[in-house]
Length: 315
Image (tube, rainbow, N blue to C red):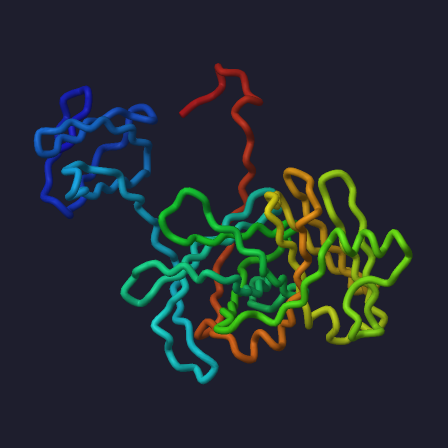
């Protein structure tokens, strides 16, 4: 049973949900009574709580309750055969031109799956009739959502087109180690300082430039021949330092792609730039059964409440 300070009490059987009325204030204090024990709860509006019994300790502990994805698609192999895995997408969130995407991987029995390796997502903005707006964005840097018991992956894309009505998502999951070239940032900086050419040696059509500024490292790719060159490879940075932000800007008119990573703390000694061959990855990778198209809700704007006098803050 669950009781609050006003004496309201709700009971139900184990495994069945107990629905509480909307809180008069948030958070609101309730007491969970279970096998003679009283457990204090602090419940907010629109929140779900679940509990699991620890049979060894004969105690109850909080279990995370996960929101359900709004689109779930099967993952298939190169012959379009089902793999028993599926991918679930949550509703995109648009805030001041930044689009946040979240995704979970699980098996068909809904047990959660930690892929353990990076995977690739291609994001294409679409207009009202479903036509693409510009080039797709390739997401290879996946960020796990901290503090959850399941692998929820999230990405944030800056400068999202304001006229995009929906987003098309396709994903590839390498079944073998991805074909990657690795370049140590400290070595690149030292070679550039000495005037040596840096970057991939297999192409005479590509030139790399690198620089650091404060907490950031920037790599510039210049393409002499652009057809297909910018779409073939994607770059990411790996480091034991926390990577606060990553931006990848492509300028097709000037044949330039600019990659910037911001680190905290600043330490480039163990930073490695990884260059992934997209064509080789897709050849042997598992993939989504079909692309997912998600509508984008109305843009929101987050305003800190500290900007307002206390008197004008209303519930």
